[in-house]
Image (tube, rainbow, N blue to C red; front, side, top):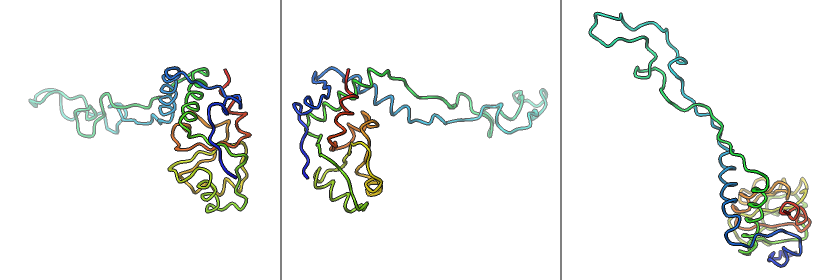
Length: 205
């Protein structure tokens, strides 16, 4: 079994909606990638204000007669162990991108990888014995000795998933779940031919 390079003509025959205009979709790809990276941020950075730090609330010394500036407590920001003024608080970094922009970005990224000759197709992909060594050999035979390989298919068998889980340079993913960032991250993209129908549906206008 050999892999075939998916060219533009073959992609159009598979009903993939391509974005061949060099300028169209570039901003959409940028917006989607930024949103995906922002949505992964936990936003959990937190500091305590003067009202939240542990303290007695008692004045450190009397109001008058000491020659020092008056102090209302031990918790203000200028005291050691006091609260933090204007420090980070938990927040939501997530960004929303509408469906049409996400679809355009996905089509643009897929088109760019097809034009670069980085998308390969195979009739099927499975590792019957569930061994990592067999998985690595099969990927190398199909995609060559490359840094990262994304394998896009339908439902992979449990044996295939088990064989792939310890290979950080390769990832199995269904055509329903693959996203724009993954299409751009991997060196080669290996598409199982039945998954082309799902990709065509996802790129349709």
